[in-house]
Length: 133
Image (cartoon, rainbow, N blue to C red):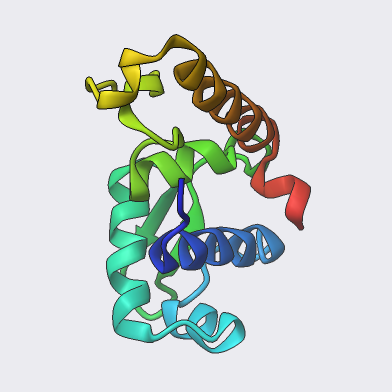
């Protein structure tokens, strides 16, 4: 698994929204400035997070974004899977995006990558946005 800038920015945006959860909405421009995320890129990321059910958007003068779920219900694993796909280092050990790969020819090699997947997944699935605020 390699974390893309898109996932990094998405996590920072979610953390920002959690930090400002007492406010009804937060403008994308405010998040962009506070977290140093290019505004156009942030707009795309927020749309993906909206489609994924993690944020809600509101229009109008008081418009902006707000978390659609409690920050404690948003795991890092879920966000990364939404934006980057599998957490597994190779598809043949992925639980959600399994595909056959050449390493399946060697059971011990496959086990090494399965152990890596399990360690990474365990940490990311048990860490939530609320843990990072």
